[in-house]
Amino acid sequence: MISTGIAAQNRKGRFNYTILETLEAGMVLKGPEVKSLRLGRATINEAYAGDRDGEIWLFNSYIPEYQGGVLSRFETRAPRKLLLHRKQVDKLLGAVARDGVTLVPLDIHFNARGVAKVTLGIGEGRKKADKRQAIADRDWQRDKARLLRNKGRE
Image (tube, rainbow, N blue to C red):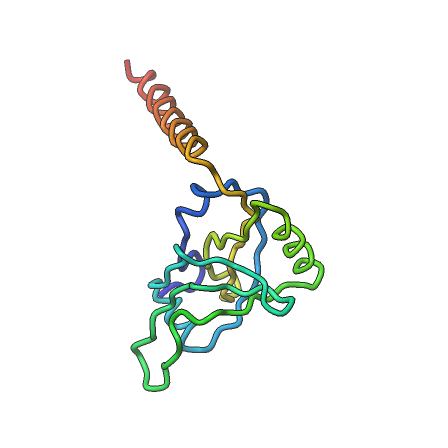
């Protein structure tokens, strides 16, 4: 059971997109959905956030049915409304209106009060060469840290 911390993470989100800015939003969830999230079985790898009637919604996120009770029936891939201030919604919709910019859910987590939140990133899609460069940079940082760590042992 997860009381605080990350319940689901989109690992490919930061790899496939250059994240320009992040934002935390609340989620409208039912009781069994929260219980299922606390078990840590949700996935948001194929999820995306978008506009519906001037509001921001989370689409295609998977929260499995909670097996602990009888009244736990809900749609596993239902769109879920995100709770944001009007200024934040307008800012996000303006950013999405630009070409090549999308809203990427980076993780679903529980804050210190135990409330489910989703971290959204405003991201631009990366090209294949950019992805290769990111891999090369990450590998170099890892090798550099290993060399510096082993230097003191010689």
